[in-house]
Amino acid sequence: MSANAGTFNQAVVGDKHPKGLYVLFGTEMWERFSFYSMLALFTLYLRDPVEGFGWTAAEATTLYANYLMFVYASPLIGGLIADKVTGYRKAVIIGGFFFMAGHGLLSIPAIWAVYAALTCLVIGNGFFKPNVSTMVGNLYPEGSHLKDRAYNIFYMGINIGAFIAPIVMEIVKAKFGFHAAFAVAAFGMVISVAILWFFKDLVENRSKDALVIGDHVIENIGAAETDEGGHKAANAARQDLMNTVPDWKRIAALIVIFAIVIVFWMVFHQNGSTLTYWADDNTDWNVSGTISNSINAFWVVTLTFPLIWFWGFLDKRGKEPSTPTKMAIGMTLTGLSFLVLWYGAKTGESQMPTAEQLSSGAFRVNERVINNLKEKGVSQAVLDKVINAKDGDGKNLIYGVKFAPKKDEKTGQTVSGEQQLTDAIKRVAPEAESNKSAFMQGSYLFRVSAFWLILAYAVVTLGELMLSPMGLSLVSKVAPISKRGLLMGGWFVATAIGNKLTQIGVFWDIWLQSSFFLVLALMALFMAVVLFLLLKPLKKAMPGV
Image (cartoon, rainbow, N blue to C red):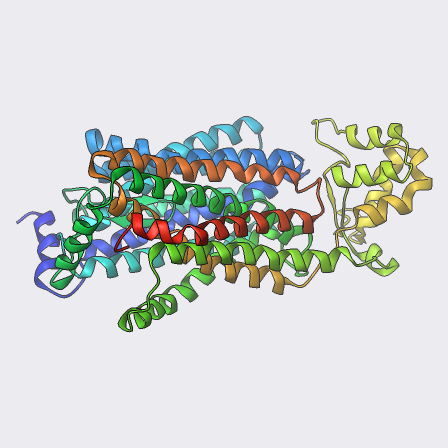
């Protein structure tokens, strides 16, 4: 008997999951460890003036947004190649090697290595991500009651990897630097590929019946749902009801959902850029912003099963909300999470730093600071010198650089951020000495409690769990069969556009932080209001969902 038949029968005969599930659990956990290791470090690495390239927030955010856009579009091509050419396991192995190369390249301190690395990571994601999730579904026969539970287990692997990665990166980066941390991310992919390679006989299987977007697995794409028992009849009845709705109404309803998804991802995926900057510059803790990338995964693990229980509780009483209603609630929570951050930022911005805070704090001269200094009468000539001052490698000496307390390598004594900034300005523009107070007050990085960031992540994660996971499943149920492939592509395009629009983070150094968070909050809440207003026609266009 072949290994494929053996694993398949194990899912059918027994009430246990096949061993292949745990192979894929480990494979995906270590892949996500590598992926989120890189994401937690990337923008801070680009901005770092010593090991990185001293980029401004706008420059780092733009590259981050472009990377995310291509990452979320790449599974379309990788899934197609796996379907037509390589098969799923080979595609995952190929993707794994591209991932290793990408993370390895990031350990080289050169800008060409960054672009080469991102290219490898996008290609690797295209091959790896859709196909490892497909292999999970292929371990089970159609209609197996174990499949949903299998994806719950698999999804926990994703989030365990996502939770551990930033913590490990924080430790490695603090002791050995960015490049060593990127090398550790590459080693995670070595483990991932090794697990799949050595246990390949347990996971090879036949057909494709699952699709993935981001970290969310959606089953039975392009086919009617085939749950066991009464669920099969209920699903057939819902599909019959759906078929009574004209195609144009169903397509229009999905376009509304796509618009919501664009705004959601634009707001939600600030986590790797502006929320990391906020955690690094404005959060009162003794770690860098890298660690903040663990918070979302922690809340996913913490909140998923209570939320599933809550929906089941309402379902038994006939009160579970429809999918569009859940998505509207999710969008509302997304907006509210950024109102939490807006309040935290307003609290910090209202502080007038004391002499003690200035002597022990951190500073960054950015575009917002330059504009404020210009309004206070600092000459353009002085400001130009500050902006254009660069070292031999072309890195900014002052503009966009973070000046925080650090130990002097020669004396072993701690040099304050205030002293470092003062010395730098004196070297570049001695005539700015009379404006020292304005520079210090304007560029001081206030810090507020980590409570605001942790609470905001709790709220936005709850919104994510109500909005994101069911998206593709909704498309598969609502889209007319003749246009299902096109509308599936539409979901991917909407997701990629949303991730590209995370580039709104270029305003981070121009607007006040509170203004930035408020704009994002209002965008999300506006879309939530639109969705609530359209619930009635949406429910008519999507009966039974």
